[in-house]
Length: 119
Image (cartoon, rainbow, N blue to C red):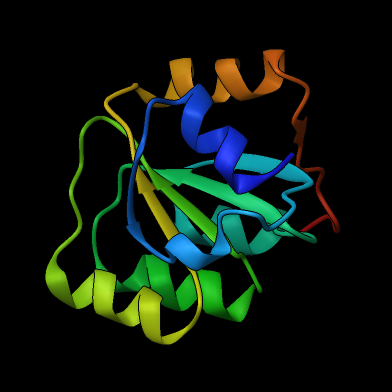
């Protein structure tokens, strides 16, 4: 699924990486626990989170996550947006709560991430 389609489905605003809207996203994972993200991250996934700090960008960078979706109307700081832009990570923001955003993407056919190890 293209990032552009995800943006439309979630009625999201693009905060960084507008030039990345045609990227393919294969799966999604919703969490506010970055340790869980590191365990489940695989491939070209979207990370849905309400956590709003630079650690989210660092986690995405370490895990090669190309798309972060901030849920619950969270707006990241300028520092977070700048970090994402510098690392070619697309950031979207939606008013949807995490449950609604994940359900919407799942219903539209975006696959969930699967655990890579028994950590």
